[in-house]
Structure formats: C-alpha cells, structure tokens
Length: 116
Length: 116
Image (cartoon, rainbow over all chains, first blue to last red; front, side, top):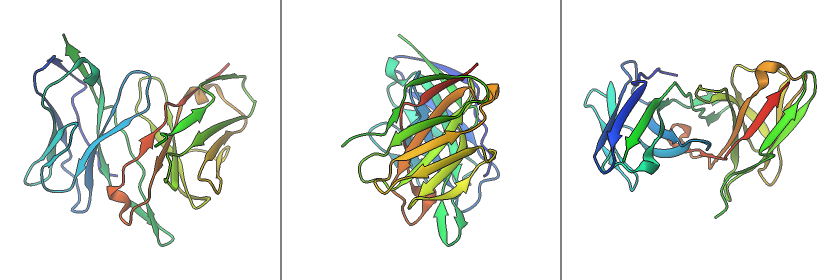
C-alpha cells in the first residue's frame, strides 16, 4: 500500500473550520483516498473518500490536489464531537484468486483537539 | 439497520491460553475484516473473510485464525496467547463492491483483550 504522511496533531476552536492535510506522493492512478476517524474508546468511523474530484458529504469535504499527491479533509465547523484521531488511507485493493479485497492500512493519524 | 456488534467487550486471559472473539456484521454486509490495535497505534489488518473463506491476510502468525458463518457473522481465534497480544480487536464489515478500493468498512466498538 502506498504511504501517507499526516501531522501528528492539530488544534482547533469550536465552530471554526479545520483543514487536515495528508501527503501521498507515491499514490498510483487507481488508488482511492479514504478518510476514517476514531473517537475515544470507539472503533474507526468512515468519513469520506474520493479518487480525483473534490467530494462533499454531510460530515466533511475532501479536497484533492490536481496531481493527487496530497489531499485535505475539511471540517466546515468543528464541534467538540469532532475531537478524534483522523486517518488518511490509500486503498489499492489486491486481486486474489480472481476476487479483489481491500485492507485498510492505518498510519499514526492526526490527533485533532477541539477547544470550546 | 443494526450496526456491527462485538462480544465480549472486555476479556482477561493468561499467557498460553486460547481466546475466541465474536462479531456480527451490519445487516446486508457479506465481508468481515479483523484488525488489531495496540495502545497508541493505528489498527493493523489481520485478515478478511468473504463467502466463508479467508481472502487476504496481514502479517500475523497462523495462531491467529478465523471463521465466517453463513449469516456472515465471524469469529477470531487466537491460540497460545502472548503478552503482546494485549490489544483492542476490531471487526469491520462491508458490502463487497466490484471495486474493493471504493468500499467502505463499518467498524464495531472492539473487544479489549488483556493477556497477563
């Protein structure tokens, strides 16, 4: 799996936008960019994913650089509930016996602290 | 819609013992993946099951084994427990799309295993 690089930690104030960066300079043309987050004492939670174009959903937006070597997860108005570890992951799905599977390769992630 | 559930929540075992952890997939999902998360680290992929067969494995020894049942629930078995097996064990289910790179995984809350 291609590697990603994220800052160890970031801080934000409540109700302000948060931009979480991720570098993936060795991304291949078929890798999808996924973001998951893990709230304290919970399993990881899917946030968003994309391939080339920017993506929006009810949780966040994903901005992908034109060369795809970096991306940014955008939380438009941070809340205290958004305090979590955010993981940027490249999914490359490996073919095995004619079927494909996709494991998630988690790095260290970015610890996001949100101040009231 | 029922989410991913895992049992038990917590478990304490001694070195050399065997343990079985259980996972019920989200309704409609046919693929189950297992992850190990040591304290302060991101989750590490153990293996994935699809149609009751192991389909993809991470860097874990054979004493880590699993099963998937016709109702898509799953078990993780660990034999000859070692102290380093102490971790949070996470189960994730997904509905295998044609492109595994694009699928999303839904995680349970995990089972906290302590080996003494």
